[in-house]
Image (tube, rainbow, N blue to C red; front, side, top):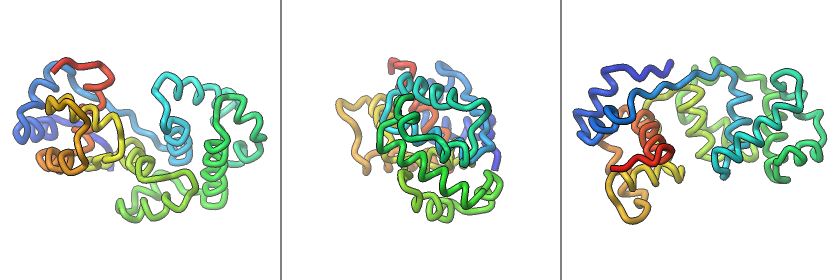
Length: 205
């Protein structure tokens, strides 16, 4: 399924939650580039886990710099752990990167293979890989498989964005976030993109 943030989607969000009228007017349209490499997408997500954007991007580009081309699972498995640590990966993330590489070395699944599955089937496969939790699954569903109705409940940026949107003095509970998100169904992924953008651009509500 291709991720198309079209007029129909935006109008639905605005009609269901008038706050999106100002968000769309002030923040503009959001574009999302497609990723057709499931292995690379998961590697990037794991490297970015629990890091701020700038630090994560620096480490990720150093990691890519180890290779002359986009690394294959075999390339990563052939790289010594010390070399991976030297670019900024922790011992645990080295294990995770190797775990993902080993899985795809033994199971060369493509993005198109994953697109044939429903969300529960995708999660069932990915959650068996060391280092991949629900957050990584949610990122994969949104940014690689382009599913339109995913709400990353465990993402700090989503909770910060919801707090700003709802003018809260503290982060919302899961129950509060779920209740707010009912208005955004079936386009919670698009709503999530705007919540992230509220935080990234320090949007004043």
